[in-house]
Length: 132
Image 1 (tube, rainbow, N blue to C red):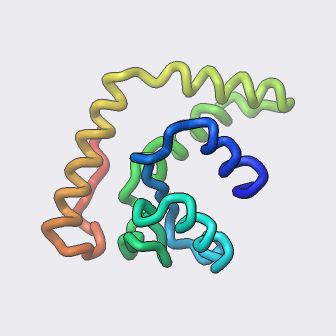
Image 2 (cartoon, rainbow, N blue to C red; image 1 turned 30 degrees about the vertical axis):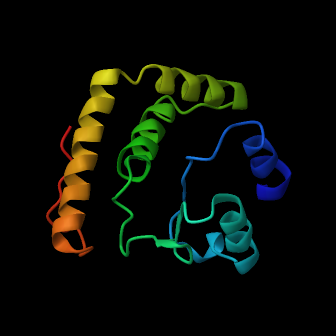
């Protein structure tokens, strides 16, 4: 996937300022994968074995993890789609219906999480509560 799709697609864009972030799951950090990503992104790689280490116990750090996937999934499957077309239509509809005001609140919460991480020196975020 990385060599056949991702890297060729990157070559179509200016990625000199782009950072790549992946979580610390061991399935994402095979030596060949990390080497390829380091070759592509240099010091702009955030990963368990990358130049910028993925923060420990940080599954609640990124908006995709603590908000988007669960939010989208709950709405996409609400009417129990029975066909692939129905599922795809639901995904498109749910994503299209996300409003800027909701994203602003998510980003506010995200910055609070980052502030907490900085202040706690990467301790677990036991006191962070998602506010909507």
